[in-house]
Amino acid sequence: MMMKKIPEINRARGYFLYTADGKRYLDMVLDRGRLIMGHRQKGYGQAMKNVIDKGILPGFPSPYAHRLKQAVRRLVGSECFVYLFKSEEKAWEVLGSITPDPMNDPIKGSPVFGDELLELSELPVVISLPVPFAFAPGVVVSKTELKLADEPVSPVILAGAVRAVYNLIAFQKEVNYSDWEKAGLIEACGDKWRIEMPYIYPLCGPGRYKAVWDTFFEAGIILSYDYDKPSVLPPYGELSDGSRKKLLKLLSEC
Image (cartoon, rainbow, N blue to C red; front, side):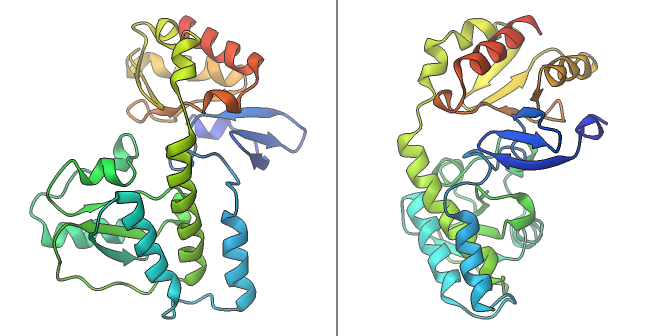
């Protein structure tokens, strides 16, 4: 229902979406948190284009599967077994077939990347990658070897994912959300929003959330379409002073 109100988007950059007539929206959905580094992250599209230019689009054996596994191990921060699938849905399906009680799908709440997710359980898990859901291979990570076999995945998808994972590793070292707290985010949210940086959860109740969403949308800010899925706070330095003040004002009033 809410998503139907969004006009046709002509382009996206950073944390903003632009319509054909120049209207700009602050995107706090970010593909349900997957695009935590914003739209058009550095080198992602070029990595995919490089493979497209080589002509290897089908899921042939390629060095990119090994490279993605190495990147995931760097993200997790330890040696582990990594298995690749064509999609996250398939990864969850396969994991559910061998694990009686697999960990809840992180897409239902805050996306969790890499080491944070692996530390939650001794069970094998599916980790999210910081790429659009439509371009996300399924990645199962386990501390012990499993009786699983990789699925063939297009080298185009794998190459983009490799670049995105290394981008995320650098992003996690560089980004600092504490400036939001210094700017009064906690006070602005009060008892209306719950904060788990960089995610913001509404506390207004499902019945009132549509009105809150509409108020933000009219002000040029797109919140999560679902009450039970968080909106994503952009890094403080990615917004202008005016955008930050507008966001804080809305959070304090809605």
